Length: 218
Length: 218
DNA sequence: TTAATAACTGACTGACCAGTCATTAAATAA
DNA sequence: TTATTTAATGACTGGTCAGTCAGTTATTAA
Picture 1: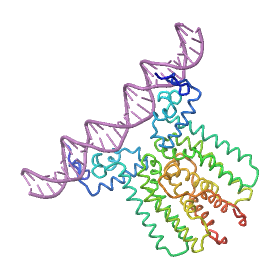
Picture 2 (picture 1 turned 90 degrees about the vertical axis):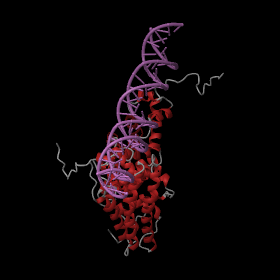
Picture 3 (picture 1 turned 45 degrees about the vertical axis):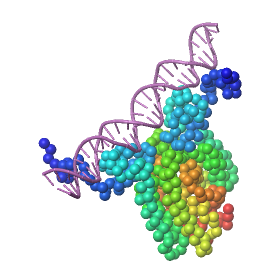
């Protein structure tokens, strides 16, 4: 005879928790996508981690791909919204803005679980093209525009040298995204230590090339 | 009645071509790995592209992984050998060496089919760890050492500012590798044009931060 | 209390694919 | 010419997994 323990809720096999399921599924999925990639993540495992059966997944999402879609939509887009608002309202020297922007990216994406998403999308782009297209349209283009606009602003106000802004924007983004990809792919196989100076030096190098006044030294 | 055409070699179902098979298999495999990634490439397709049956693949390579192993070993390692030799024999200003090194990488890797390999390894690192470890040990570490040594040389000779060489090396490599990853993943989904200026500007920015004499302008 | 609803379950299906091996046939030796 | 060797074939096996659906059970309505 087993007595029911309300904490473990052994009295019933399951509860109906319609409200909570979607978030729990997305969190479980992101964790597994990060660990194994999209293709190698099994729906049974997502279900297990979310505390439900596989069938229930399909009550809330119509396919594996739609889960990933939702992860990006609900986790990344709000971050970009925030940064866009910050840039729009910023008053002050453009080099300070750019420095804060890079640091904000590092803090809000680079050092969080969101950092796994670029690597996942890149890895699966060949086999899941709609997913890649969605990511480019909703994340990449917005992020690129953000940096391009800031650099343009600096050029227009005369704070920065006259440069080709598209390439500069990509040169700013590259080491940041590269670091997150590295983090989630080959870093575990590399015993060399990447110092914290990496981002600081990146900012320093970029600003040194952009800022007109050479007496300025970061 | 069909007459045999010696060019199409319809007279026999196949030829024994022990010598040529391995290279043909590796070329077919790299092409498919580039297009679909490692996991999604079917051995039947590698066989078909190499003009043989699947069983024959297994006469020459013991597994799918060993084929990838061979691709890296036989295609990438020789490139690094060449660059190492070039650096070792170089006489002249270190900034010129660094500039040539970046350009050489772009020409010999970035713009060739080899550019697909980093993306493939990164994508599959979670599911094929031995493959990732092999790549880190035989490619990443050697490449990183190459750049670190050149920067150190510039610092020692007094041509470059005193910098933390590990981070600088990674800041040099990041935009290069990032561009190849982009090329083979999200570029097809992006209609924006990446100008040729990207690499030139990268070189210019890096050297501006490294070279001591500020009157020098690239 | 009983009936109706819908959240949830998990065994099952159909498709896919790396790797195997019995067989075939090209090349070579006897 | 015949026997032997070995490159090459492709049907098959065993395992995996996304997605389905008939049935079960918690919840709510009557």
